[in-house]
Length: 193
Image (cartoon, rainbow, N blue to C red; front, side, top):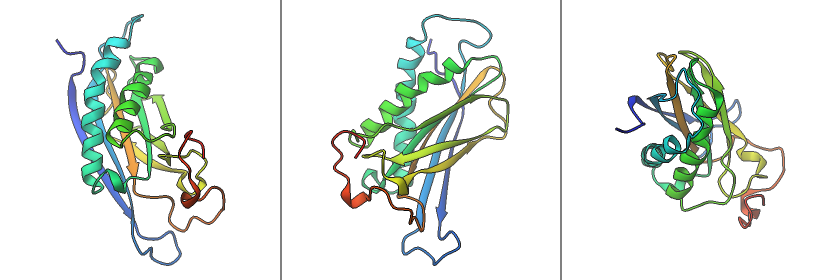
């Protein structure tokens, strides 16, 4: 029997036209795909979490593909992040399985970019909002691409569930003008610059 039992899937896409300044020539699209999954370890301590992590890779691939389709293709994606909300009968480590499972799957779907996938995780109940940090897919120091994507679902996670989410964006902040490494200067060799 599979350790990954999905109750619900959700896909959110927002388009940002401006942030108070002129309307952008091309809107920024930010998308979040999430799944509410039963926590197989709720209410108990289990030493070996690796079987769950391994099975979650398929979910990571599915959510990644949903995001890429929603944003118009992998070549459109410039930023990414991931998040998890663990229900009250779980522990933070149950959400940490998503670091490898979700991050690995997303990087693979995008052609193995170099930058670390930013992450957020917490323990909470239904309706919790987590702001998933976003970063440029090739270089962590691209300041214009530091952003967030909201991950929430009104009826989850329940006590024995985990919400796993991935986020992607087609660019950096609208009207970004605070300097730092420019996208045009990214070398993409080490994930930093």
